[in-house]
Image 1: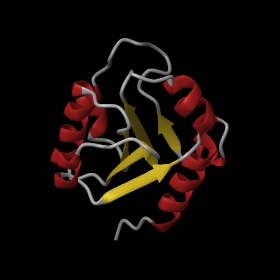
Image 2: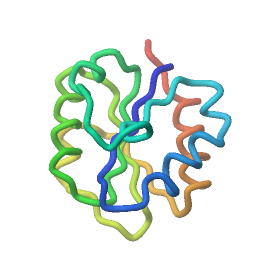
Image 3: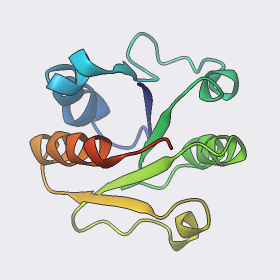
Image 4: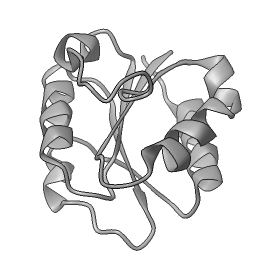
Length: 124
């Protein structure tokens, strides 16, 4: 499965998102794309999104760029999964593009909850 993790740049995404995902079993089981892993320069994510199986959005921190990417994903009818830290308040407008929300407490908890979600996801 080809998975993308979109996010704001307003937190330490390398430590809190990228490192835990790369160290997890998810990394071996799926092709995980992390947008700023190689460079902080944005790539052509609009075209990339069309090739994905699942679009995850870390929505704990508001971000215009993240909102644009979520809109592109919604246009392709991809499953969009919003993940957010306990105590944050994701935008209520996200309910217009997805019904999938995962609250997590720690990076390890995030990985476990994403694994659980993917295990239940059906493409039928």
